[in-house]
Image 1 (tube, helix red, strand yellow):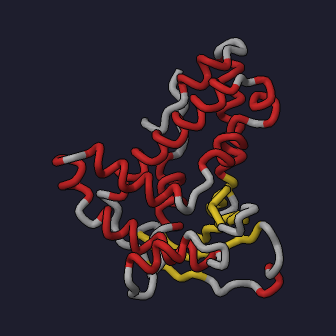
Image 2 (tube, rainbow, N blue to C red):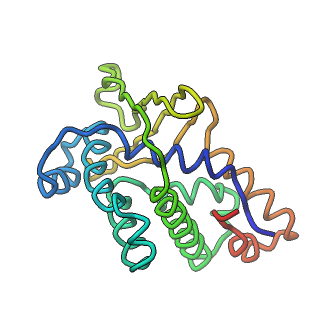
Length: 216
């Protein structure tokens, strides 16, 4: 069995995180700023946008000429703003994460990450433009370790609301840990599907991990 999800929702949520209209700035300065503990969640979104847009602007050609480099470039940028380990752990769920071996955990993190990056990178090569507005930071979130960064966007199918949960690490850096698209919590949905996969494989965790796929 191959794990499948409404990829247009996943892709749209991840795509929009890195597609807010960032102000023109020097890419090197933005990239280094993204690594600084003082960078706010909203600034992280803006900073990584500039880098990603440069990489994916020639996505179709890059996919044809050198797909491995294209995927690697997208992954490098995404890893600066997405906590793949945290998300993968939550998707697996506390029950299975605790019972999994170190090797099983590492395998799922890699399967989850590489699959998401490749799906995102391929989709970015074909995505249409969206009219996007990023809501101003909420002063009530000051001092919190988890904050919501909210975007409203207008696309071919109307207006949608996307909420990004950004978590602050001990280093002070902020990273994406979940996406809620029009009230649908993608993290919880994927966790439910992973649990279903384990049940359908008769409790075989290795089989469930191997069956995960972003394709389809």
